[in-house]
Image (cartoon, rainbow, N blue to C red; front, side, top):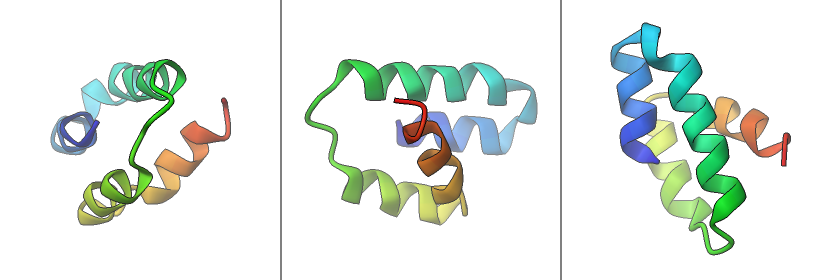
Amino acid sequence: MGLKIQAYCNDPKREFQDKADILSLLQNNANIDYNRIKKWADMFNQWSAIEEIKSKL
């Protein structure tokens, strides 16, 4: 998931697909380590985006 965040931050054309992939990962994995995801998202100032995606669950 961290690589998805990095990918769309580095190439905005990827954002829609990568965020859809993140949503799919969240939906299909019950044991997500949100602390680890937050650390990665914070490196790219994207935690609010991840929280928005989480709200769609």
